[in-house]
Image 1 (tube, rainbow, N blue to C red):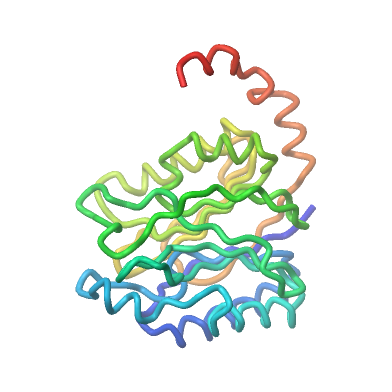
Image 2: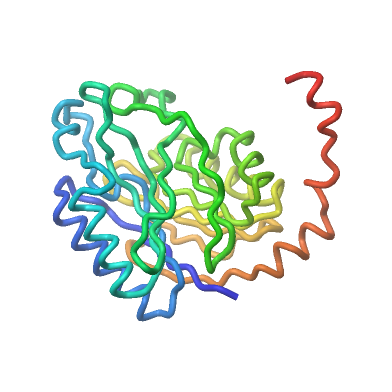
Length: 268
């Protein structure tokens, strides 16, 4: 059994404010005996539509910048793993990566994942400000399971979660900033449950709340049961994950073993 803390917050436009809030939540997560604390997408800052790509690029940092260094120190000081997100500098002019980081409880940077699928849909165009990543990250073994990293809009592409699962993930962590709109809460809840059921894994999805975002940070177990939905409340909650449940569900519902890749490969 392991314990995960999920943070649902309303990020401000000011990086320093968000950093101090994150450090406070890391301490709170440790006080509640969590092994890992997961933050939403856009932890570094809320970027309103009025903010230009050039203005956003000015607040971006590298993974060894001050923002990440402070998070790494907080992880080490509190002996807790952290999933956080940043705007990462890219080589493209006026474009930044939407990057998720896994920091271990010694403050080491264990994984860096750049969002593959940019939200160019339903009236949004993230590619006006962001650059897309080009690689999946191999799942990382942690005290809360083998973590596969995804970000927000990635959940709409089931190929990605399946590949991560086949690579060894038993827990998918999905920092998100899910935009409000018609049927958006229903889409969010349905797809998180579907990815958990079809892969027999936990899905941990911390989300932004307020501004233009829905909240509803969720944790779904491997059989599709919602074990946490934070609705629209800001703050931190903890849940316990059971590695034995993953094995039990996969034994009883062996979807991964019953795949017919010999057939699928004919059409790929």
